Amino acid sequence: MPVDRDAVLDAAKYLRGVRPLDPGELREYVEDQPHDAVVRQVLREHAADLGVVERDDGTFVVPPEEPVRTSFHGVQALPERYDRVVEEELVAEYGADWHRDDSGDRLRETIRRFKDDYYRRNPVEYDREVALGYAVYHLASYYAAVQYVLADLARDGLLGHDLRVLDLGAGVGGPALGLFDFLPDEALVDYHAVEPSAAADVLDELLEETPRNVHATIHRETAEDFDPDGEYDLVLACSVLSELEDAESVVRRYLDGLADDGTVIALAPADKHTSTHLREVERTVEDDPATVYGPTPRLWPGRRPSDRGWTFDEQPAVEVPAVQARLADASQDPGEFRHTDVRFSYSLLRLDDRRQHDVELSGDRLLTLGDADDRVTDRADLLVAKLSRNLAGDGDDTNPVFKVSDGSEDTDCYAVLVRPTSLNRDVETADYGDLLSVEDALVLWNDDEDAYNFVLDEETVVDAV
Image 1 (tube, rainbow, N blue to C red):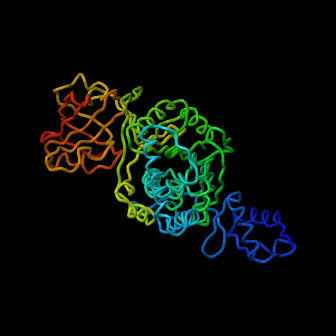
Image 2 (image 1 turned 90 degrees about the horizontal axis):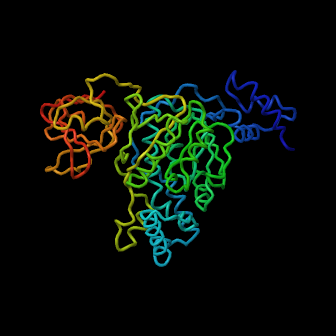
């Protein structure tokens, strides 16, 4: 006999704000008194609409109202359960020896081809083989990258326990899986993936491994064609903006579907083209209608950056996933197919005028980076955000170099540490995006790089703000 779903849901709506929903109790509110397991299944299927999460004891409760707080310590590896799903898809497509002989050669050639297309900015056709190649090559690094961005939001109290998420160009799902695993068990996620290509088939299989309080729907449409329904707390646009013909219009469209306190997370690889394209989109939608929350700052009222905008973060590499290792080790050049670097550019856009650094500078004491040309060969005081790791590498004969910004610059600006001391070491230890107070930096023009260098020596004091 079919269960009276309306009766179950009416009782759940009545009781959810009073006490945990117990399927054994709820059945008493239904005329035919269905089995507890039947009631539990109804609650699971409608959990997103009811706004409840399932607990280990089998009851359902409203998720916490306070923001997510997490002790995030980085990402070491792609979880084995996701790696296993990718291998199952490869075995289903090519057989047990998918990584060897003709199938292995085809996959490796597919990876070479989409890497080359990406480098040459050619469009990539996402058929089944390309989707599987992406899962082997990119899944782990994308899974890791998004979690470092989410950690910024959580640290600032901007990530809730009840999230409606829209994932544009979701691909095979690396950022989505990273989001789900970043959130605590008591978080409720109503997840909508927009992905028209064969990558959606791989994503569909991977979503089977996600936590029980993730409720996923895949929309097999393009980002340009999809009609957002309602408001979203998070809009993910990861490694997709550079593939759109009119990324600015797409971002504006989805900003219209963003909740008043929601965030658009735009993520891109760290290479020059995609990273600077991301900044171009960020700057175009800024103020109409979006606020750039971070990581790029806007410290001087009325000033906006117009430099190249090539800035990216770099985090520790993840372990080589098993499927990636198998495909790589069966080749003559294993390093060509190992991709575990976590290097990415990102932009956080909001509609509530909040910024990561709620600072408005004024007065004559601090140098505005956009006016650096007036102070070349002088010493100056600055307040800037650190927007790179050490760009000079780890060699003993090189001076550490860090991109810096205050949101006013029209030319790239770098801090160069030539004399490390206990008073300026914060430039090395500060995290990506942190503010730095700099006293007595020597302002120089670097003709080779067409950039301003702010030289930090024994006279310079640097303090993390």
